[in-house]
Image (cartoon, rainbow, N blue to C red; front, side):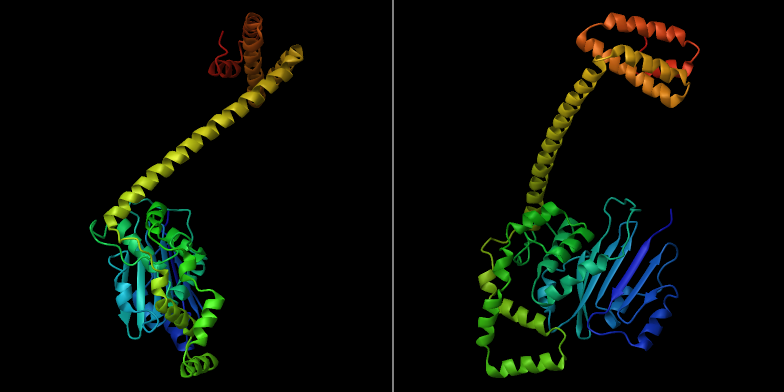
Length: 383
């Protein structure tokens, strides 16, 4: 099997100039390159570019996927909308890291396959599109992505057991579609997320309503409102809405905070283990209930089928003779199944001796059909 590598980059805040697109073309003659994206798939060879440098210079989001288990996600944001000191609390290992480049902060999230199992039925198309929404949410002050990155570090054992968790953002129990896509892409343990969510306030505590935002805006100084409107009209600040939402969240942070004591990485892993054992127990119980229900249903259907055969057994024997007479393997299988049905019927209703006698006669009559006899032996019709 060949290797599979998928690279995708997206420019969000500004389109790429023609000169920049030409520079990217020098890195790959096969890539699909537009003013806002770079996409390429490799089944042999490797990409000549450095994704980190491309993120620093051109792009705002990057996704890398391979069939040997490596999964990378990078997001770039202006430092004025995301405080590097806040990010540093969450990005503490190889699985979640961050660095600055000029006016930007870049977050890198990574998953390596701990089991070393190759994945062949995968594809990267559409994944970054399903994830990219987390960038705007992060710029607006929603730190759940960063916390998921910290959980990825915990799961990869890059954090000591006694390390305390960073501030827990609200809404971990109700991840939206982009955050869910991130969790799935990075293969973050769902039981670990559930354990962490127990210390997270509800999403409504951090998500302001339209009425709350209007009340807050009316209390802003007139000069600030003028600045906001000016920036909105000129379009110079592509993150204006995100900055305002983040400012609102910062101003009301105490209202959305949780009083749950900060837990350690080891405690979260232990809780996740307990949750996993409980979930697997429930799943096993459900599977057993389903199995019993299916067996009962099959037994009822079996009895109905035997009731149908009991109406005219001579006709069934005639049909068996006709099927065997064709000398075709598939028809042999049908004949043997009918014989099994008749055996079960006589064991239920009586007449087993008569059945065994007719079976013996049948085997003698077709003694020169080894294929048929072999089929009879395999199902226990070897009297």
